[in-house]
Length: 207
Image (cartoon, rainbow, N blue to C red):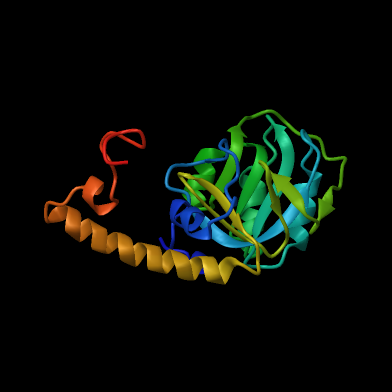
């Protein structure tokens, strides 16, 4: 499945093409194998162990957005099948959350992509309404509503809204160059030759 928002590119390609620090720190993983998502962010700041902010976000977020939620990495089941059904009905594309989720099998059956810092069954409260639409820091990266979020098995990247188009264009060019390199490799050339690398490293002969 490709994602038109990101030109069909993987997170690694976008990260390398960006030339800046846009990758969230490791630890956000797909809740089910094969999950991928891309789309504009709708940000949520909640309190770990409480999921009222997520209920509010599902009701408020515009269709075609990805919920991006900071729950402080709390190991609780902040999100599950009920919220996923509600989100799908409202046209939301998926969830990236620094916090736990549950019902991973059901999420896979629904084909609803979720990326989280843990999978946990522990219950949550519903007392803190949260803050919607304001910037959050997700694993070291600032995310604003409208930024492009892309997530796959390798990680999560966030491209600021005003840079996304140019990064995707550079990613297109990077893919074209890599396809040419693949052909050269299949014709017998080595990566050492193609990238002009010294086998001995920077301190070796010829450097």
